[in-house]
Length: 353
Image (cartoon, rainbow, N blue to C red; front, side, top):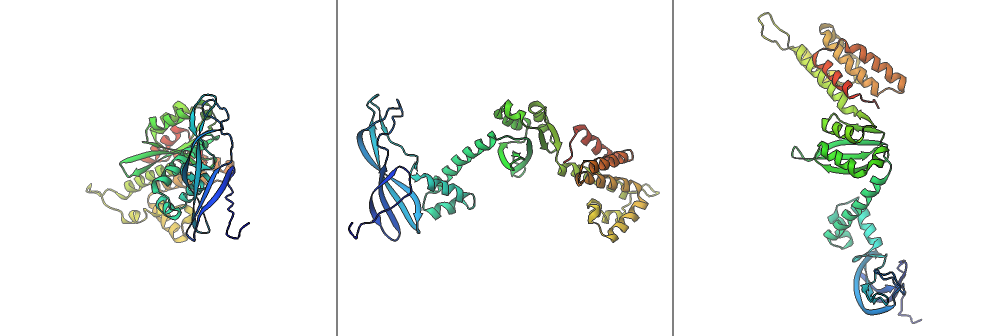
């Protein structure tokens, strides 16, 4: 072999290297062809060997040692002897003007950096990377939705605050997002469940949502067999709102003249009342005990919130039942708005997790 001849190994299956067209410190250009001798006709499936003409197509590949690699693919246009159809050969190693391995690298890099930076790093167009990411996202989404889902998480979020809302659906078994459906209505969630099919919905055993009546209507219609659980954040938030309502009512005590007066001590303790009991210092607890002696209603509301938190923080089922029983005993003494919160939660028949 002559000393000025070099060989290139591309590690592409069924691709034959014909020649090295250019070999510079910045670029490597290689002429290749398919190693498949008789491609199949897409019409009748017969093996074809008649070549009508050959066209050269530029295909970008992964860089080598910091050099951009371009493959000049001598792509044949064949004539089928069975159905007399002309077609251009394809190859699984190439996807459009990129190799399949470069396309996978672009999608992988797009998960860690912006698309603009990925395009600049690999020397390709922004739209080319964006189309790959969108196409691959569709494939991944279909694959995720086909997996078994026993616990379904549903919540809303705003893409544009107070103007554009979407419903986010997550598979709790894998932690992966299944879909982001426009709007936060009954039709949004029910439409997604209808697309999944009856067999997929039958596998769902638990659905976790907030207190949205729209989501509840969709779940009753499509997932009536599943157990509907209210998420911990919203339940505690409702009871915290009840505690705030009781505190506001307590701090506005009446004078003899009928004019409402402001109790500064109760107002100063408004944030302390919402904290967990284990997060309070000794001084904080003494301060709250003084307020509870003067305002027994405030003590009852505060204890109800702590017992509710104890249900979620229980280590086993027995401890959770004990906390639930204590909360039920306090229900008889819950004032005003706080009792309304308890009735609202009980009407949903939630599970505690």
